[in-house]
Length: 333
Image 1 (cartoon, rainbow, N blue to C red):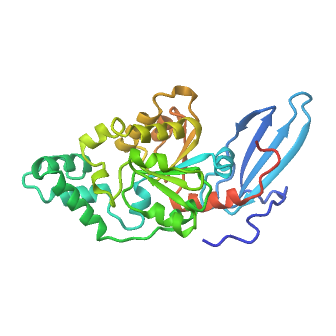
Image 2: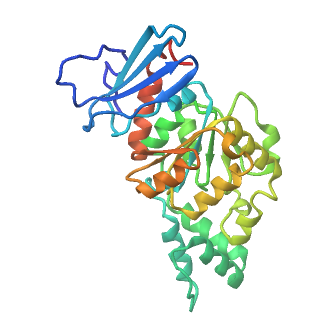
Image 3: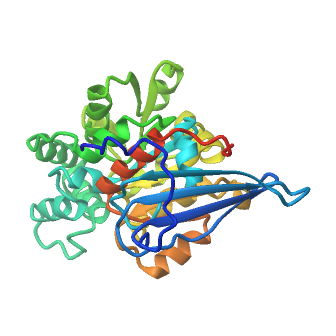
């Protein structure tokens, strides 16, 4: 997506009253404490990120830094998130929404196609886990996995704009619940060396020279690794101890960014709580991107130390690229 030639240049904020279209995010730092105040402005105009540094000892204003980029989303991206990505201190979690946007079937659609192969199935035909578990019990796991792989392999697709933008950002690692290779394809197109991690035997081969791509629900290239039935989910962490320790490391030491997940999805909630319950209130703040989130979901996830950013994945990715490319102000940590 083209970027305005002036998008990466810091500019002065006009003081004239005609600046209502700008979103202003003020971050005041007194000593080492940060407090983020809400954005102002209602239109989708340029975002202005302003950082003011005060000296706690004498109350004197010691510095002011302003940054602007043409924004596609209504909510400014938090400065803490921008800095974490820029400093390679963030991990991106990619959900099914990123793959569905590129033409792959949603879980409900795949579930219906499996359910149609069973007579007298009286469960929820859109619940993939329930349908897959029933089909495996009736026809066997081999028949289930063969049908899933065949169904998805005959629908080739390419990484989209969101994949491309996110792959170009310096995330410490990429974690995905998707079986496809869209993340890997985007990283390859960005000429970023990467190492796929699906099973415990992959973990020892991780090196600093390659960005990890952790596929916690398996991948189509290794059908035996697919996580789809009830038992697969029950055994997910207990049978993959090295992979679980790797996820523990990310959840305890990195800033997490979730894109492509439905906040109300039980699978997403189960994944999040399984990985965070051991760290309690001391865990790092996380961010989740969802377009038009319900206010109830916002409150629920804020209680879990997850800030919800109201944005489309493609627009969020484009804005994040612009924000990270801006010169880092001398006032940020």
